[in-house]
Length: 323
Image 1 (cartoon, rainbow, N blue to C red):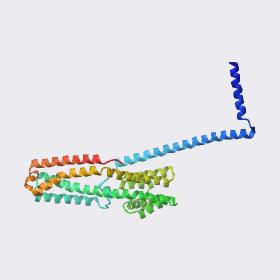
Image 2: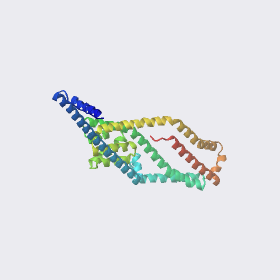
Image 3: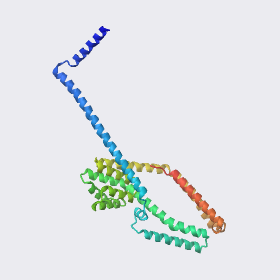
Image 4: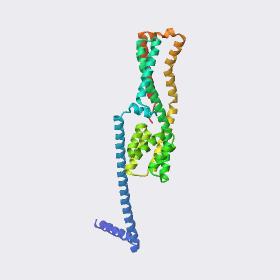
């Protein structure tokens, strides 16, 4: 046992001597290599810690922004004036109510002249007078939102090129407001006008999201808010955002192509009952007038409309996908 310990001790001493053999210059090189490796490891660990801290701060800020936007959406439901602005109108809500009332009165007069039952005279003016204008308003807003989404990625590219060329952010926003067609140009014009009168960029972006409540504007507001508070490369962040928005657009196109057959089937199934009823009314009106002239027929029409509406909503939920 003593001999084995002695042999191991001699081997250890020999290894140390071999490591530091070769003169002072060689020893110093090895020591410097060891010191550089240790310092490099410390610097790398410090940089990793700073990157993790920055990532945590950005994630916390992102969660705060999302919570604030969700709270604002729940608290501030869009009023009728806001919906008119979202649809591209600058009119007064009073004109909207006057138009709705006029449609309801005209529909009631038509029902009265044609001799419809009391139930039809009650329900039809309500549906036409108050449902049709809101449907038209929602349709116009959806069309305007689609045009805005189609042009928004290009507007972000204009901001990226302007920032890379050395222009400040406000000037880049002015270029977008001046050069981009509506509705993107109109929304950025409102943003720039607000900045001129002292509104902060964060408040202007919130106002822009209220006027155009889309996910693209929400992403843009989050990126601009994070960059203003935590710093960073704005052009790179906006360039990545433009790429993400284009990927979302391509995904939306793929979803539409994949669900086109189901949508066509839903449209055919949903349009068959009204089409058949119209044909029967044109060919043999006395056969179908019982649905309009008798109380039982009115109740049947009401039940059919209810079940048709439920079926349409179910089919719409089946063919619409989140993207």
